[in-house]
Amino acid sequence: MNKKKKALFEARAQIIKAIAHPTRLFIVDELSRKERCVAELTDMVGADMSTVSKHLAILKSSGIVSAEKRGSQMYYRLRVPCIMNFFGCVESVLKTTSRDQLELLA
Amino acid sequence: MNKKKKALFEARAQIIKAIAHPTRLFIVDELSRKERCVAELTDMVGADMSTVSKHLAILKSSGIVSAEKRGSQMYYRLRVPCIMNFFGCVESVLKTTSRDQLELLA
DNA sequence: TTCATACTTGGCAATATGCCCAAATCACCA
DNA sequence: TGGTGATTTGGGCATATTGCCAAGTATGAA
Image (cartoon, rainbow over the protein chains, first blue to last red):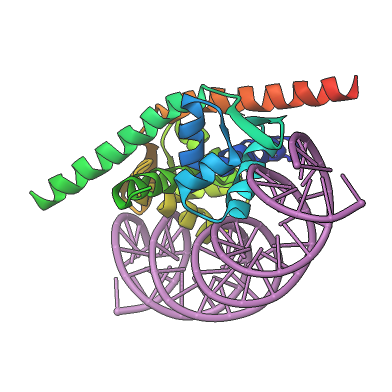
């Protein structure tokens, strides 16, 4: 694999890594419904606000969400809705996997 | 967030984590074209065979690829082609991100 | 059986992640 | 200017990931 190709796969992996965490996945899911500020997400997630803020920073720097400051609050929104289509595929992996496991038991 | 909901997002994240690595991403991309044995993938990737084998084990245990032994070789194939649709979305994140960066420079 | 090839597994060192706490910013208002 | 609420940043610690080497298993041929 040459250098250029390698860099491309690294860039892609970087984006996927950004959503490869339960909390960040939850945030993306939530933001697909409506924009939210950090305090709201912190409530929903139930972790330290600094933790949530760092998760948001990761999502933002990878280009998945965008942020806008309004007053003293920072509102985050999903910038790439096509991510949501992928969730269906993930769900289908979960389904086929558990189906196969059932077959093993049968 | 209740326990059940949390478990769901953890299960999803587990699957996404499985492809959140440049080498595994490359392997998935390659397997979307045709099935391959470990030696072939090792050649293409350019890492130790044990490393590639472990990457394949991760993809397999998450349900993304399946494996079949034929003779002394183990052939891996993509079990969930819908993953490939997601790659287009990842690409669009890359594009919009770099477009935004160009705008910042302008 | 012995040997070679194909692959997997165990183990370890280096590196990266994730979380909380504490401290620093920032916006707004008195 | 001082104070308060919202958010980000720095730091330290625990845990997880990654990659190589070495050793183990499995298949097929001689």
